[in-house]
Amino acid sequence: MQIVCTLLCAYSVVYKDNNKICMYKYAKDGISVLTVLDTRRKKQSGLFPVKIQVIHNRVQKYYTTGKELSPEDWIRLPESKVRKLIEIREDLNSSFSIIKQNVETLANESEFSFNALNIRLGRSVSDTLNTSLLAKIEELLDNGQIGSSQYYKSTLKSVEDFAGNKIQFSSVNVDWLRKYEKHLLATGQNYTTVGMRCRALRCMMNIAKKSGIIKESQYPFGSGKYEIPVGQGRKLALTLQQIGKIVMYNDGKETSERYRDLWFFSYLCNGVNFADMLKLKYSNIQNGEIYFIRSKTIRTSKIKRELQVIITPEMQTIIDRWGNKDKQPNSYIFDYLKGDETPLREKIIINDVIRRTNRRLKQIGEIIGIQGISTYTARHSYATVLKRSGANIAYISESLGHADLKTTENYLASFEREEREKNAKLLTNFNT
Image: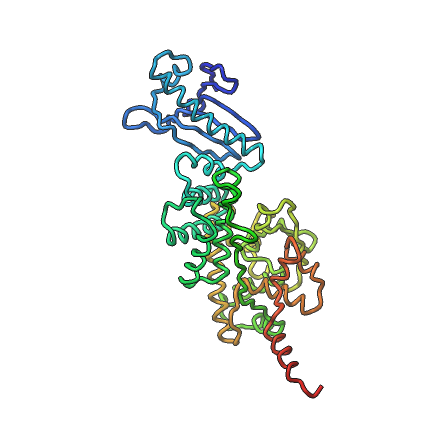
């Protein structure tokens, strides 16, 4: 790094770094802000754009300033007495200071993210829900959170279908949310989907409130305001007899046996979801047990709870039959992922395995007379079978990796059909 010259500001320097010339540098809590002449691509004018670069966790974002300079003028800029360069210098210092101030505020509140910064900076351009959702999607993609990015992408499409592509934060009030709910229901969505979409919107409104874009009085969620509905979808939990039918099913086709066994392994492995199951490596196996942390909780929970699963003889048989023959510690137990995939490619592979498994399970279910079998059914059935067998709900909750018992209760078939039928008969059991 070659220092060319310095400004009077303590954080202001001009230096060359690879293909960029940098000026006005500031750093706090692992976040760097720099004013740079981006020499990667020359503009039609023959000059290069001046941008504000923000770096956090090795992720770089660039914010345009609307200024263009030659490398020579950029180097002369700090001490130049040419009127044009003085004006540019003052404008750049102003742009840098705005971003620096917002970064510093977010860092002090331990709330920094590119999405939060984009929203704060967006106040001077367009206070739109659309742009904040786009920024959130981009942030999630940068972090490799493909599933979450798709979740917010669906929400963006949904709200734009409802209210257009320039939705002001100030317009998202209680009445707007109620109309949006009616819109979703009218288009065939259920309350589970309504809840998902509104939770995404609540996240964006929380950021907008913290960023000062809306006032506390404008915040539309909560008691006495708009309360997000909770969908009560029909839960399907299989009985042990039904699970036995699936496990014993054999049509002589290797494909049926493979996906049947993957489903059974998921059931036996604490109802592990397929994404986590396909990411298991031989290094996760220690002393006859599988140790793993749910991917879902890695980013969302401060405490990373490691789950333990005894490898039963049935699980070992499935590993021996369908497992990766390369048993190096870094090899995946089931040979679908290789380890060098991008987050998007990894998501595509996992979704493809889930899709093919569900398709085969549906065919098996039609033959043996069990409807609604899916990869998710394995997890729900695991919890419910333990409950029916008298297992302690705290143990079930711990084995599922849930943060609290309430979450576990939502998995349990508290109102199963067989229980409802039994209770209904009690109403007319006049002979007792």
